[in-house]
Length: 250
Image 1 (cartoon, rainbow, N blue to C red):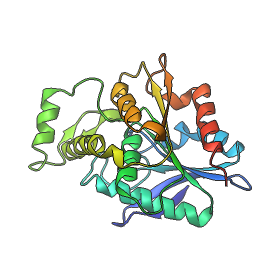
Image 2: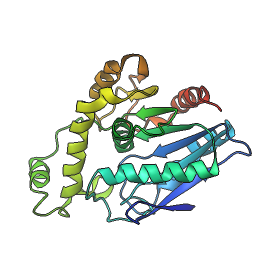
Image 3: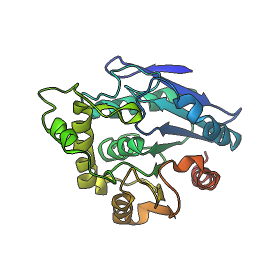
Image 4: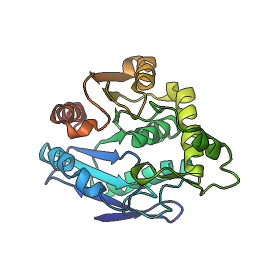
């Protein structure tokens, strides 16, 4: 277990899977999962597979999630997540001076896309999106939408339970980020792989597919019509991820 401090001082935890000599550093941002435990075990198999392929893999517990600091399931500003990713990239660069590939699943994919739109300096070699959360498959309940609209009055109002828990402030920030990504995606000029599961009941993968098509030559889509949201638990998807990353070896 490793630590890095966010720009605002929030302690962030990440797990590292490092081979003897790495050719690529893979930085992974997970889906929405605000429980204080469980993230490390969830990605151990993926981390080991990437390490065995000769890649150094780093899995960040995002703020308010897992073992990292920050209020559970809350976001004051979405931009804080971009600063967190930048801090992780610097920490990884001190450990491995090799090309970096960003990987985002669900909520993590939303963060990576916004980062690519707004951080032109020191771009990563490439990025991978696994069912990025650009829109929800089902519309949230009316009271949740109302809570997001009134988030300025009560930003820490709890909405949702368990793995779906988030505050009203977080809900408002995520909705803002989804709109911003869809408005600004043509700023992205990095090679990208979109891993999309057609049976996803969480995210609207058709929105992601349209965005990928709009990126033209920068984006490649790997479509899995029978797979659901948790794509990276499937061996054939992890193999596609590994092949794509391998193209960016130092």
